[in-house]
Length: 241
Image 1 (tube, rainbow, N blue to C red):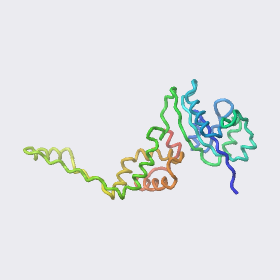
Image 2: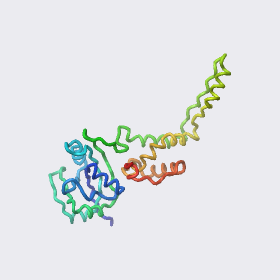
Image 3: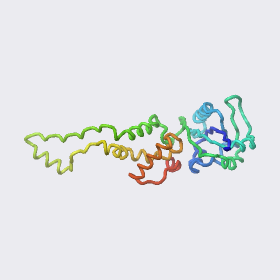
Image 4: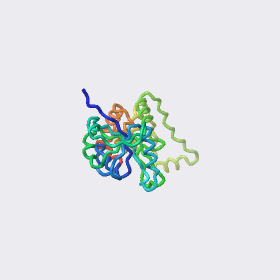
């Protein structure tokens, strides 16, 4: 018989979210704005709360919505005060209970969304742009690369007479070589080479947020480790300079 878990959605400010990143998704901050941490049971309402907090005057201009799965039995014993009604119920976790609360979190904290208001002057969370889901398209192309017809390599431009010899000498001095195009055998490796910086800088983010299925992520990691040895990706390594 498994342990019953309760799923909570928690909006965090910039400083609070930095504590989650520093713990690599293992703990909530022990200190929060005010004397309590707000947690929401209803996901759509949590998105509304986070978006509102990002645009509230006087804040840091950013709000990060995270998913937390905590042991239900502990939450029932804690009996945090409630506010609101219906789907807008909010749990108010006392700041003094946060250290113990974090020890009852069953799975790594998962960042879901980042909202930025006009007062925000920092950098955006990786993957939270209009092209944040391009990893799925990239993995699909990578998977089908061996069966794709690669484009034919461009033919070298024929030198124009009467300066053919002069142009060949000029190209030799510049180090111009014949371009070798991608083939069915090397197309996947070429894709990995071109996307190397993007892949390595976002691995921790994709793993922490679940944007890449676990089996697909394992296959990608194996290919990258063979081609470009690198440390194991972490959420902290992705989000902190």
